[in-house]
Amino acid sequence: MISQWVEITEDLDDDTPLMTITALISGGLALVIEFMLTVPALGVHPFGRVLVPVAVVVTFSVALTNYRGLFGDGHSLERVAVAVGMAYAAFLISSVLSLLLDDFFVGLHMADWAIYTLVGVYGGGVAHLTVEIVRGLSLKGLFQLLVVTLSGGFVVSMISVGSPDWWRDSLSWMGYDDQSGYVFNSTLIVSGMVLGAYGAGLVRLLRAADAADHARQLTPYLMIMAIGTMGIGLFPMRVSPISQVLHDGSAFIALGAFVGFALTLARQQTLFSARFRGRCVGGVVIILVMGGLYLLQIANYTFSELAIIAVIAYLLRRLNREMYLGRLAALGIDHMPARNSAAPMPYQNQRQMETDEQ
Image (cartoon, rainbow, N blue to C red; front, side):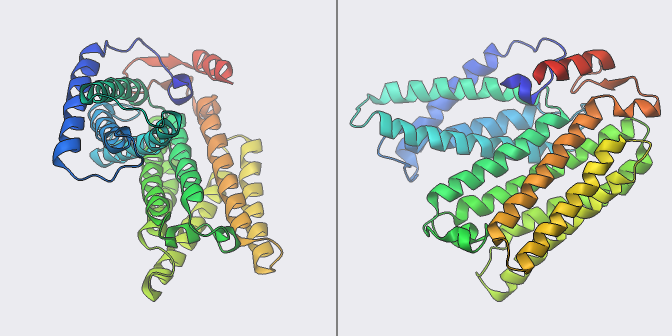
């Protein structure tokens, strides 16, 4: 599973000391949370009270101190965005795990020391996985982090939404609902931050490939996409007239920026393959068609939104493949630099690793 997030080019340092220290800190943090703070439990078991906050704190701290960008020169805002995205993914996964533990072990009573020990072990394991992921995080890994945060948040929101007919309105209804609003809006805010980190990584890769002009053309669209996505979560629908206007405006701005981004990619004849450029144009056509079907009241708005999100995810995935399968060779690049390492990875090895993953 880790290989789906990172491309390992060298053995990682031994993180046993980090795991040990983190386990001790996690156990102590669980003790503090349980006895000194008032934290709502996700279930009847004490795991629901301490497991989630411990996982979030550990993941954020480890990711922030270990992620250095694709070339080891990541901006501080980029590192914060990745750390927040990782912490949010840990929040979603740990929340589901906590609820499952409540269902699997109904009526189980454990001594306090056993609970804190297990939470400590869990914290150490989370630190280990976080280190393995962020030290070798590639552009593909940033994209997959975006997919995890967005899809995971949507699924949790769909499960917790109070109205069974929310889908008749739009996805944004989940941000207005009292039960799912917190998760849905947080998901969009975090996804916007991760999208910004993805855009920064993409621009840095293009500049490293002597494609600075292409990077300058794409940068405004990437920034607007990230800001617009965050705006959708920051301004929920129907809360107030101003919030509604800002919500709708953020959605259209983000979507318009992606359309401009895709059309700009389609014009890069020296950078990307003809097939990929054709897919970019086709994706824009599908987005426009889905919008027309909604305006004609042929397609449900929620269905149209999901279809547009699927198109965006597909094109970004194909963009990652273009970047790492040697499409930049037309510019004289025969290898791509390794992430978080000064040692380059030969293009043939890069291609073989991608083939193995598939």
